[in-house]
Length: 187
Image (cartoon, rainbow, N blue to C red):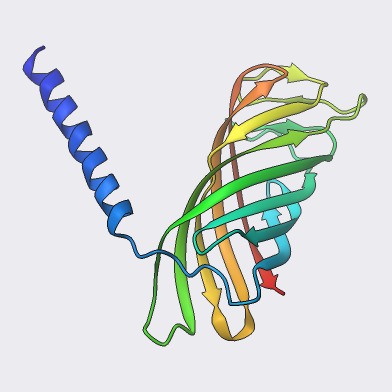
């Protein structure tokens, strides 16, 4: 093992230990309002969707989004759709940290997760993927959502910005990246 390899290995190990330490000392999130574990709202971006979130406990939640990819023209390193198509996304997310003022009127959270999407493509609809491949078939993607959330306690609203890097596994492998912003009201 040469000196550069050893230095890189130590740097990677140090970064992993710091990340594990941050996760270990992060305060468990109080991610929902007592008696109001279900949120419903809208997500704008790719996809644009109706969005639901069910808190399973103080830190874990299930997110389900049903909406549409919008038809848009070629943007480098992204999808190119001829026509809009429906998409279903299901994610398990874990709130790794929350912070904010002592009043708790507004507070902030960060979540990480794992999930997947199913994109239906009608036979007369086609798209180009990030690698320039042409497809006229439905797709399945696995992804890892990362989000920053803002919670307004008095009105039970959540606003979020989320990015989800992923890998399309069907009809052929290709990288994917989706980004959206949105909000949910908790019932």
